[in-house]
Image (cartoon, rainbow, N blue to C red):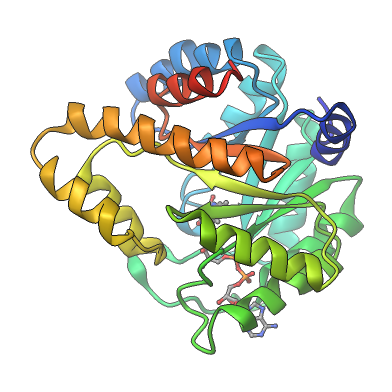
Length: 294
Ligand SMILES: Cc1cc2nc3c(=O)[nH]c(=O)nc-3n(C[C@H](O)[C@H](O)[C@H](O)COP(=O)(O)OP(=O)(O)OC[C@H]3O[C@@H](n4cnc5c(N)ncnc54)[C@H](O)[C@@H]3O)c2cc1C
C-alpha cells in the first residue's frame, strides 16, 4: 500500500501521469462479483496507480466500501483510496472509521462533506463536521493519512455566491492539509484550465487531477450532470441528442470525446487522470489505449 501523495510525487519526477479509477459499491452480489473478478483485474492490467471507492450517501455503503478497500488492498495488491463523508456521522464515528480503514492496510482518504440521501439539504450532525475542511484536519491529526479532496471546475452546485467563493473554500481544504484535489467531471477543458490556473495563482501547489468520464448513454449523462451541476456544452448536447436511442453509438462517441479531452489535458501538463469508471472497464481501457497509457 502506498500513500497517494507519494505516487503523485514519484510520477511527477518521472514525468508520467498518474492513472486512477473510481468505483462504487455495487448493490447486488452479482455486481460485487463482476467488480472484483472482472472490472478491477481488467483495470489492473492497464497501468493503474490507484483505485478509489465511493462512500454511499449518508454512510449507506459503509461496510461495502470497507470490504472493497480491503479486497483491493489485500487481494489485488492495489493502492486504494477510501472516500469518507461527514453526513450523519459524529467525530467519534469518523475517528473509528479512520482507524478501521488504517487497520485494513489503507492510509488514503478522500475527505468529503457528502450529500444526504434522497436529495435532502445537508445539515450538520450534532458532534459532527460542517465542512469537508474539518474532516481533512481531523484525518491528518488521526494518523499518517494521505488526504485528497473534491474540487469543482464549474463551482459547487450549492455555492450560491459563485465559483470563485467555492474555489476559496477549496483552498481552505488544502490549507487544512489536503495533499491532492480530484475534480468533478466536466466536458469543457476551458473550465478546468481556468480553475487550475486560478488556484495556482492563489498559491495552491498540490496536484489538481481532472475527473474524466467516458459517456455511456445520453440519458445517463444528462442525469449525472443535473445532479452535480456540470454543464453539457451545446455541441456535445446536440451530438448526444442524435444518439438518444442508440447507447452503443453513444458509448463509442463517449470514448472518442474522452480521448480527445484527455489528450488536451495531458498536453497541458495535468498530473494524472482520474476516471469515473461506473464499475465498467471497457470504455476506460479504450481511452487509455488511445492515449498510449495502457
Ligand atoms: C471526486 C469526487 C468524489 C465524490 N465522492 C463522493 C462519495 O463517495 N460520496 C458522496 O456522498 N459524495 C461524493 N461526492 C460528492 C460530494 O460529497 C458533494 O458534491 C458535496 O455536496 C460536497 O462535498 P465537498 O467535500 O466538496 O464539501 P465542502 O468542501 O464541505 O463544500 C460543500 C459546500 O460548502 C461550501 N463551503 C465550504 N466551506 C465553507 C465555509 N467555510 N463557509 C461557507 N461555505 C463553505 C462549498 O463552497 C460548497 O458549496 C464526490 C464529489 C467529487 C468531486
